[in-house]
Image 1 (cartoon, protein in one colour):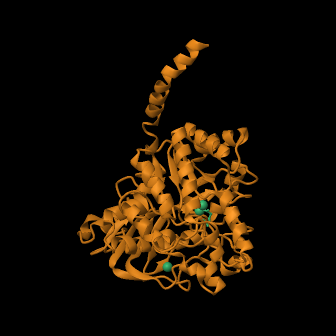
Image 2: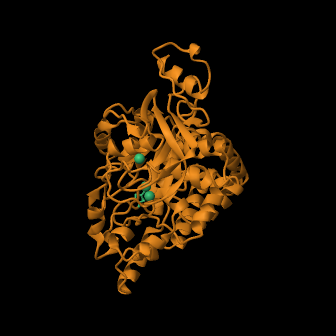
Image 3: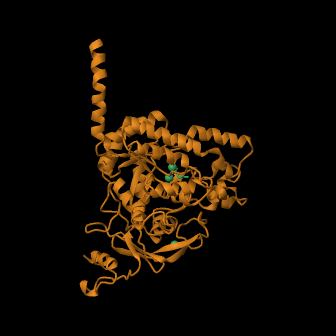
Amino acid sequence: MFYWGIKMESILANFTMALVSDDVKVIDATGKFVMPGGIDPHTHLAMEFMGTETIDDFFSGQAAALAGGTTMHIDFVIPVNDSLIAGLETYEEKAKKSCMDYGFHMAITKFDDIVSRDMEIIVKEKGINSFKFFLAYKGSLMVNDELLLEGLKRCKSLGALAMVHAENGDAVFEGQKRMIQLGIFGPEGHALSRPPVLEGEATARAIRLAGFVNTPLYVVHVMSIDAMEEIAKARKSGQRVVGEPVVSGLVLDDSGLWDSDFTTASKYVMSPPIRASGHDKALQGALSNGVLQLVGTDHCVFNSTQKAFGIDDFRKIPNGVNGIEERMHLVWDTMVESGQISITDYVRVTSTECARIFNIYPRKGAIIAGSDADIIILNPNSSFEINARSHHSRTDTNVYEGRRGKGKVEVTIARGRVVWENNELKVVPGSGKYIEMPPFNYLFSGIDKADASYLSSLNAPVKRSKSTT
Ligand code: URP
Ligand code: ZN
Ligand code: ZN
Ligand code: ZN
């Protein structure tokens, strides 16, 4: 009741105070927008990767998120020695210090009877409803087409959403060798070694295989026109494909990778790479016209000491950029301030659609009776400025350094607690809750009917082949 009071008063900013009792905090939101807290569908907190570990853990990364108006995130569990259960246990431990609500996706790095059985346990008992397949990172996380097909079939039978990191890992490996042979060792070699065509190819392949299995597909971090156009084509034909751009792809171009200062250039290294100017604008367009549906960050930060592992060889630069704190501001400024999307669309792409896809709507992604009170107040007339000095992430660089824009999240309320107000964070380790996500989201509805009509279309040939034997 107490929390509901805050919610109502925030919405009805100027409404009479007589409505609520004395123990209710009243926040004046006159002239501001009261919206559901952001949900970031794609983060990597405390992830062991490329010989090191991301420097934001489940406390620092989430604190940064809350300061930027995001009240929930979904992180990727990486199996330990290919074991899903061991991986989940590791992440459960990491997440004990959480100060914000969170959920998990699970990466699949191997497929056998044990993995297949564990996928069922993960979905039915552990509250995870999505599995990610990396088509890149040859030699570590990468899976081949045979494994992807097995994984897609298993996802379908469990009602779990298959997600792909779509780059052709074999061709990336070849591209990297090419750069080294040419004597290109710097961060620009990262982008040159894995051009958009390799993202387009893998996106198309994953889409076609998901279509062949007839199961929904979620393409993470769509960074190029090439990948986006494959998604557009599939959606136009009626296939259930979700495309997730990330903030870095929407607002940055690759020019930073050519900076002569290694610390500056290396901070932009992520995969798929940040593309040449033009891809960013095209992705914005795709977000505004619905080809792409929700915005993530792929928040995966390494400090400049960690990035310097690759000072002599771009292949050793840990891949990843920041964004968990900046997402809500940059999407507002880039998309709403510019008139490319409406305020309602903003709520959809930063919060509601994520809640729907991961089947936790309307507990999350909405402000209605019964929802968790995850609420932000955004002042459209205030402005933000981003820099590594004042951000809340533990990393010492920021890929959006110096950026200013309009629209500032002034208040963040996480499950009824005011955690960000007057530029001050009030967060408590251990207060964040694990959000279980049930299988069979809306993308699965009608899938069985399509299967039935496919089978009946095979009826005639089946009869024919039977009668000839
Ligand atoms: O560069 C990136 N994206 N690092 C995180 C791992 C991934 O591919 O999502
Ligand atoms: Zn990825
Ligand atoms: Zn990622
Ligand atoms: Zn901040």
